[in-house]
Length: 246
Image (cartoon, rainbow, N blue to C red; front, side, top):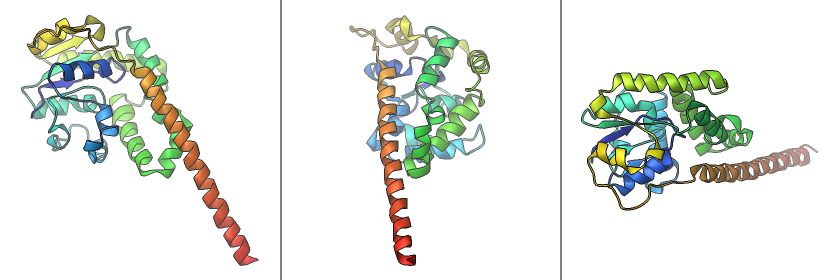
């Protein structure tokens, strides 16, 4: 397979519903959930860590992660859309926008996927688990650092970054290769852009915020368990030393 569609839109711009729609249209689609939830993609997180720790613009063996996909949306693919377009010059570009604008995108992002930076329990997992530090390193450098310019803690700067980014994509991609799209527009513009038939069913409307918040709750539970185990281990070591020295 080869990439035919490259999603440039930030996460939290309807990318989960778009992911489902593209799969329904026969374009196997890549998305952050394919990195962290698809057991068949073992090693993908390490690949994206390598990307995150390489200079911007670097080319990689993209087929390592996209071999079974013809489309990508959401993080981490959107962070390297320019590199992907250079590697797959025949691909089209899909720029998803939040239906309610940059301010709503910011609120949604802070409330969900920014948990790697603003939820202290995730820091415990970073300290105590290989997955935690690998995922934290990748997301901090590639998503929040490189793509969002490290401005997510400043609402005004983050909103400005969103708007500037949208204009940058529009300016860089020829109009015939670019679709600027909101999921509230439904199937028609997407199918027309891809040259495929309209499905006779409603456009996917996935409640991804609730799904992500459930994942965050599970991570918080896991962090408490890991913290408890770490404390128990420390207490056991101290007790053993006290007994030995006594």
